[in-house]
Image (cartoon, rainbow, N blue to C red; front, side, top):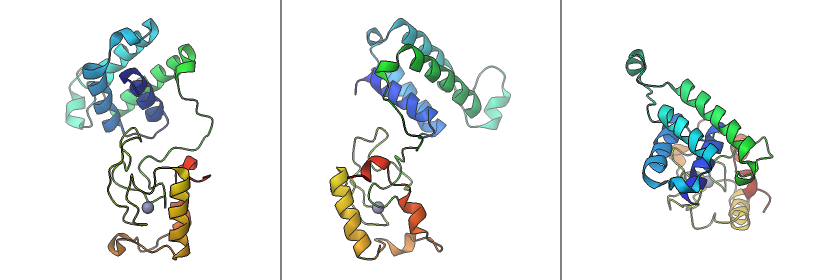
Length: 192
Ligand SMILES: [Zn+2]
């Protein structure tokens, strides 16, 4: 992905609720200010991204900051702006955006094998760089046995056959509901 594609991807998935405002604002600013080649943008994209950077760049989660007039923007304001820009971009540059025809969210912070919700992104913010950490639930190492739907599916089947043992027993919730957890497996890793 080049920087422009990363911005579009980031925006699309922020709009769909797959990133927190913190992550979105940080990543947007980093790519927009440090990596983006402005010549790769259409005029409309340039205007819209510029507009968004003025808001995302001054996002603050702190109430005290937000009391100061006209300096910082709240989470709701960043979300509003991002939604406006996203909707305008999908009208003007639809062909460049990844089509999203499922209403299901992508769970970038969930294990591809067992669906366990992690407190980090096992495959990175763009879902393309494995962390090589180990899932506390099913024990898969991210980037090793969960690279493709087929591998993840085999790993999952093995784990189910063994009776869904926890790799880190101390992380197991008291009222663990395996079915609810399995529903968080990213859709594209189920069919394989
Ligand atoms: Zn897992």
